[in-house]
Amino acid sequence: MTEIRRILVGVDYSEYSRVAARQAVKMARSLGAELIFLHVCELATFLGSSYGAYNRPLIKNFLEQQEELLSGSMCELEEFVKEFSDCGVPMRLMVEKGYPYMELIRVIEHENIDLVVVGKHGKSGMKKIFIGSVAEKMVRKSPCSVLVVKFPSLIEQDEKEEE
Image (cartoon, rainbow, N blue to C red; front, side):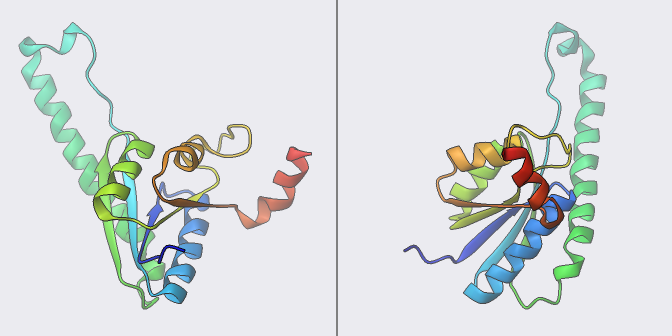
């Protein structure tokens, strides 16, 4: 069995990710593992010719807005993890930009992550059959183990839906 030294927690600021973070903190404490909290800002991309070289001021403004979004997201992530600040577990915070599951995979590989913890559903609250789309992609594509945490008050409801 692989020793779990680094746990990555995917955070989208939903209650699902808060429950997943609490579970990850408990596991990290009992395993003596480091926690890495990651939020991914899903940023729009430029498509089409209307954003070509002739529209540099618009592109510059867009890039400045991206940097503001990243900075604001780090502040929001710091606020999110405040409740865990005295848990006695070493932790780091990361904010990346891109597609959530792709950035999670990239960070897993770059940081040598042993376990990923995500909430069953994300911020949108929409359900994709049984689990959220990012969680589902992580289970299928992650190079390490993935723990998908259910929201406690919805466990019975989810079980009824699956029947």
